[in-house]
Image 1: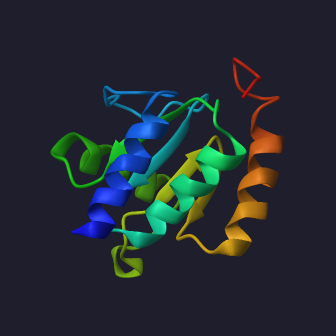
Image 2 (image 1 turned 45 degrees about the horizontal axis):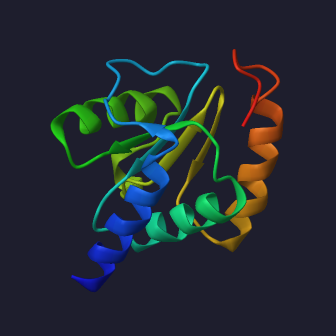
Length: 125
């Protein structure tokens, strides 16, 4: 329960820079972070994002909700992620994706972001 409370607090803190509604389709000009309230790696990712990219605009999508699950499935299919790989943590930005989260993913995220931002419509964090 403590992990959920910490994740919820971190997601609420990060929610200030993310839209609350869930879009119906993946947009190539947006960053999506699919999370689960039960996922400890999601909390680590949120902590990294809050610390290093506090103003980054992204869609936070709870993959446990019906709408979030449908959008997560679109992302899973887009990147050819099998159901066997499990988990709900996925970040999508344009043609790049990050699944799972470890310390090494921080550099991967920053690299993907540096490639993505110049291509998207806003071009800013």
